[in-house]
Image 1 (tube, rainbow, N blue to C red):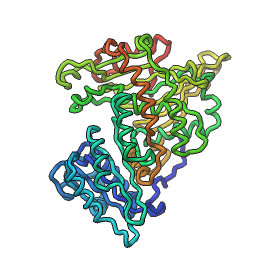
Image 2: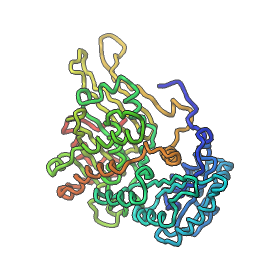
Image 3: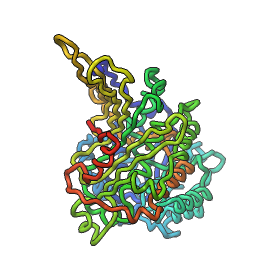
Length: 493
């Protein structure tokens, strides 16, 4: 365990001298804003991470004002009740609420007038305008068009204004729809202005994948097919689909988690070292991986994919359903570094525990002079209890030589005294600062959907059986048999 503690994790905004900014959230009364975005922004306020001159314009369809909206959010969130009242008061002074219909030109004309009230070109103050699309994807196109039509994307007098948009997932539901959405956004914004979010990218341990690999000389020389037997990525949830079941029935586990969270983690884990830590270089390397994921064929789909559905899901979804709430698949990265190494991916709902982990299973020693030399395993726990673990063989004390595999752990909460910033806090701060390194580029989106299309658009996909499993279990028994037939086992700590 790491004993040294560092307390200086947060870096106040005044040190970074952030410019005046107005962040506008469309869909501010939805669950995403109330449960994640507002708590993240309030934490940032508490730690002085927001720009000194910052306004938050919350746009929703409910007939509220700033006070009733803030009361609604605080009442809904147990997290916000713990925030000191002085912080809430300070944050409330930054808050604007605006009622709007997302398909109404008149609403956007009023929003334009409202935001313009905060620009004072004569005093050299021109707010950067940042727009967060936290609505249903069906509104993205209309919001983008009306922002442009009402002059909400233009500069202010002679002073240069930066305009950026942040788009939530799902970004399309297949390759064709993702391309159409990319095309629409790129008609109104440049690629440098578009921030496509995957909140997993903001997790400390996801970013630590690159650090462990490229900052430690003991790992990178071994990071290849010659030394790694296989890799597992597991994202397991205990919750059921619940009230989201009707929506989820149009998506399923593959679209909901594999296309974004799981493939993004896979690309970070397997990419080559970027020349520099710039957004462009990192995303170039990630996309190289996504482009060479081996597509599924009718034959490989039969042997390389398992679908499952928990008991009771069909009732939640309103009737009969073949939508998968669990999926396990075997993927391959067709590069010289990873040729032949299987990547076992699984995700599902209503399972026995909530955990997200990446485990790299090294090959057993080619020749072991001791009995029972077990393979070394490097595990990145993304949630909960963010940590890194390394399994090493050691001698058991006593006469003779018997081996025991011990766990060497680096735990974030034990190593660092300060509170770990949440994923949305980090991503919102990067959005404000204009840092795209943790956001997804259009070609990455399309490359990942091309791979996913080889599954969901495959004629064999609908024929693949959906195996029923009981809630609070590890998933369908077929998923266990799926990996055991390769003489391997699912690994979670």
